[in-house]
Amino acid sequence: MRITQATLEHLNLLTPLFVKYREFYGALPYPDSSRNFLEKRLRRKESVIYVALADDDDKKLLGFCQLYPSFSSLSLKRVWILNDIYVAEDARRQLVADNLMRAAKRMARDTQAVRLRVSTSSNNLVAQKTYESMGFREDTEFKNYVLPIDEK
Image 1 (spheres, one colour):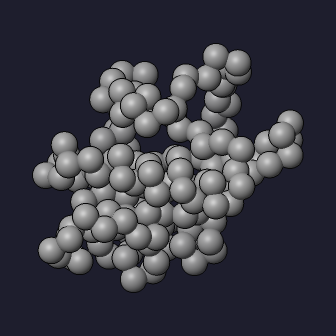
Image 2: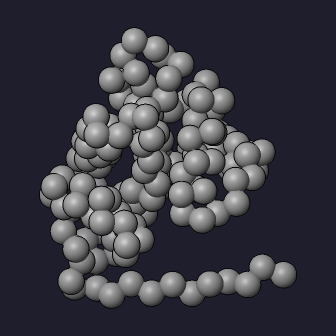
Image 3: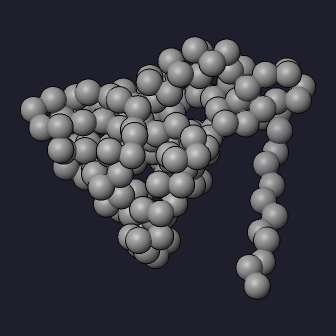
């Protein structure tokens, strides 16, 4: 497998897998809106997306991860949020997620980030074990909260 940073040229390959990722977490598919969302992130350079491509087929996407930049006021440094990671069903158990996270970790080091953050649903034990095996630790210092903003 080959890990590379996604460009607009990967958009048609990336969108169907992004839609499956959204469905995995219970979101409606919305393929057109999903494509537009990804296109905006790439065009505006608001996120970094890594894709895992099959060695033998540049048109076969095995998985992806998307990272958003943030900052830590306490450490006065960059933080990267590993917001999305997904592996195609037929590519699981091939260390795709591990390779994507290694690329994310390299990028975080290269940009002098103080940390890489990730979260997953509390019942996604497979993801939790994968993150822990890669060196992620559960945050025991800060408790996270969410404030939903009503759309009207």
